[in-house]
Each structure stands twice: as structure tokens, then as C-alpha cells.
Length: 261
Ligand SMILES: Nc1ncnc2c1ncn2[C@@H]1O[C@H](COP(=O)(O)OP(=O)(O)OP(=O)(O)O)[C@@H](O)[C@H]1O
Image 1 (tube, rainbow, N blue to C red):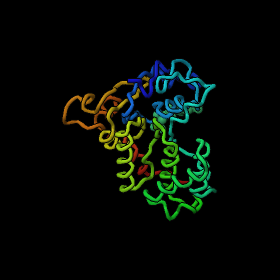
Image 2: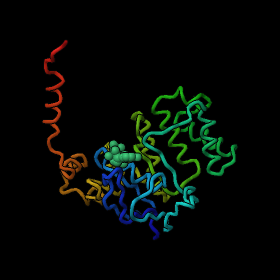
Image 3: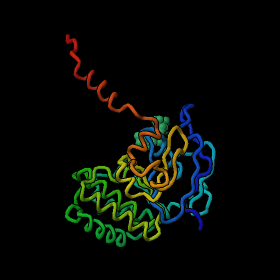
Image 4: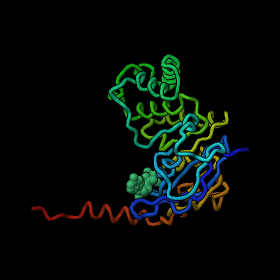
């Protein structure tokens, strides 16, 4: 089977600091991959390189068996992206914004508008669909981004913190949507810091630390024993043991009597 995503020895530095030292993996279609790592580990950088928003210093990327060519962006038709921090044109209504996105992917405005409205209705945005996005809550904006990433029915999804700002009910809906997409052969590559969700949803977990992949596999295959959970495993593998001491030292300083002028 042709891999959906293949990274072959990717390296990337910023200002002399090597963020990605040597990152390689290959992902089969129809897989949900949780891409995890500490803040600043290089998760967003990896995704931006795959999407052509950044250029790697070394290494090769293939999507659906085709080596990415920076001069040919036709592969973007097959990709959906939810960025971690999105610039939405929030002076537009959701209808206007999503119709515009659909058009950028080659849909007619009628088809894009109708599809977006039907999706918005299902996730509870129907009544707000013709309101400006400036008036939306964080969770509502996130749903707009999720719809925007799916309008053109892409094969591969890159979602950076897709559950950002969503309430508990919306999280459940999005989790089910992810699983349904996977069941229909889509590949989902997402990053999140919510370890219980990553543990529950991911067919495969890839843990990035110090610029390399230090764990890669299903949760049961990377867990040392059956009693652990992904949060514990993450702490162990990234060498982070002293969270209690850190919290105490932090609050000691907060509550320390200060000299005031
Ligand atoms: N355009 C840039 N210029 C300089 N440094 C950058 C740039 N983009 C990212 N970095 C640095 O690269 C490192 C990795 O950043 P990245 O955003 O990929 O991390 P991340 O794993 O996604 O983190 P988080 O979980 O906090 O979102 C950080 O040290 C960041 O400061």
C-alpha cells in the first residue's frame, strides 16, 4: 500500500538551533496519528514543512507516494489543515469565509456555501452562520476552521490542536468525526497536548523529543506496562519527573513577601 505521508531524515534549524535533527516516519492511509512532544519540540515546524509553509534544510517528504515539489502545489487539493493559531478573516460571516475557502479549492460558490451550511448546521453553528466571525466564541471559530479543512474532502488531514476551545460535547463530536473519517480511509495527523484524548483516539502515537522520534507505535506497543497511561509515559520518556517540586517553587515565589516601594 502506498504510504499517505513519508518523512525521510528531515532536518530543520532556526538561527543555528537545530529543532528537527533527524525525523523519519511513514504513515499508512486510514490511520489516526497523534504527534506529541513538549512545547517547542518541533511539532508545528514538522507540519509546516510538510505543508510547504517552511522549507527543510535536509531530507525528503512524500505524500501519497509523490515526492513534494515546491514548484507544484497540486498536492494541496488532497490536504486539509487546521493551524494552531489561525488568522480567520473575521470581518466575514462563516458563510462568506467558508464559501471563499471552498472556491480556493476549486468548488463553485453555490456548492461550497451549501456544503458549509449543512456541516455548520450539524455542529450547532446553523443560527450563527450568517453572523460575522468576530462575534463567535473560541469554540465556534475552531469549528469554522475544522469545516474549512474538510470542505474539499481531502485525503490527509493535518490538525494542530484541533480541540482548542471546544466544549465537552463538541470534543465528543469532533472525536467521532475523526474516527469516522479514518474509517473511510482518510489519514489524520494531529498534534495535541491532551494526553487522554491522544491515548484514546490514536492508532499510532509519534513522540518527538530533542529533535528526534523517541517513541512510535500504538499506545499498547509503546507503553512499558499495562498500568501506565500516556501522560505518565510522556513524563517518563521526556525526562520530566519533578513537576511537584516545580509547582511548589513557583508558588513559593508568587507568595513570597515582596518589598514594595
Ligand atoms: N519561524 C521561526 N523562527 C525562529 N524559530 C522558530 C520559528 N518557528 C519555530 N521556531 C522555534 O522552533 C522550535 C519549535 O517550535 P514549534 O512551534 O515547531 O514547536 P511545537 O512542538 O509545535 O510547540 P507547541 O507545543 O508549544 O506548539 C521553538 O523553539 C520555536 O521557538
